[in-house]
Amino acid sequence: MSDFSDVSGTSEKADAQGQSRRGVLKAAVAGAGAVTAVGAGASVAHAGGRRRGAPTFVLVHGSGSNSFSWTPALGELALRGHRAIAVDLPGHGLGAYFPESYQAPQDLERLRTEPSPIAEVTLADFAAHVVDVVRRAHRNGPVILVGQSMGGVTLNAVANQVPELVSHLVYASAFCPTKHTSVMQLVMTPEASSSAMFQIPSVRTPPELGVSRVNWRSGDPALFAAAKEALAADWSDAEVRALLNILEPDESAAVPAADARGLPATWGRVPRTYIRFTEDRAIPPALQDLMIREADEVTPRNRFRVRSIAAPHFGPRDPAVWADELDLVARLCR
Image 1: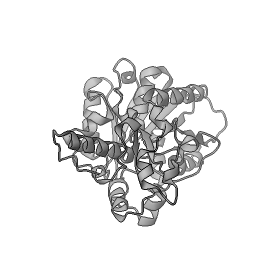
Image 2: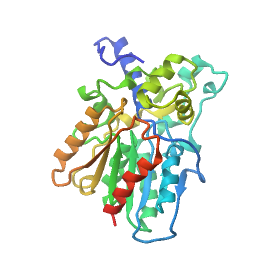
Image 3: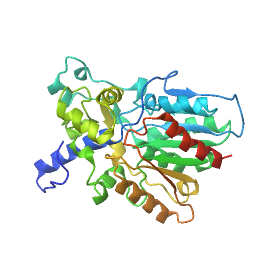
């Protein structure tokens, strides 16, 4: 991946920069955690029966990830008596597309041009899917909508549509555009310039393919080192390899470019928490703070409740840390 600090007016460098951005966004928004799914399209934790009034957590993954990433947190939430579901966004999880050229042995030249159906998936599709889940969960009581990384733009879109169905929004080192319109605009800010994601090589797909693609199965030591630095620098190599193996190669290029602003009249009515990951090298704390500040300026009477935890982009290794934070939010919704 090219370094974004080298910005040129030439079309060749602009194309390379565009490819780099797609790679950055693909990797930067990958979710946290490890694997296992219950049923098709979601992982579920359920304890305590149908207790009306007890909140349900709806967990949304980041780019190139899936519901599997939330499994450790789901287990801990269930053991504490919470209801929770982790969704698979359209084109992810069991519905993900893995190009034939991505399999072993890999065909790297074909991988560069092989089409993917996820190119047709939009932020509106993500929102429609999660709105349906939120409607169903709301029948049982309050809904707490949680997003990590690029999952934050889905939170914005859902809260813009059905703010009355969401009791609390939780952004876990997640994108939250308000004054900047999109993820793409946010990653072009000076606050994003230190992101280690810029060093992860992306597959240089033609723009017309409409996908952001990363070859997570590459045996290139440089790619692995860059991914570890950006996503989980303090994890062991074995843990990072396990995490990379749950990631998906393709993400729609339309989603990070979409207008994903939280609107004051709708999204702005919902109480919200931002969990800052102080060790995040993909979405640096400076960028997290910019998004918090801009959101608070848009809705000064409904400001972020801010929490900080020492975690890299993949999130805390200990699921109890996730559960501790979500426990606190649940108490606000009772």
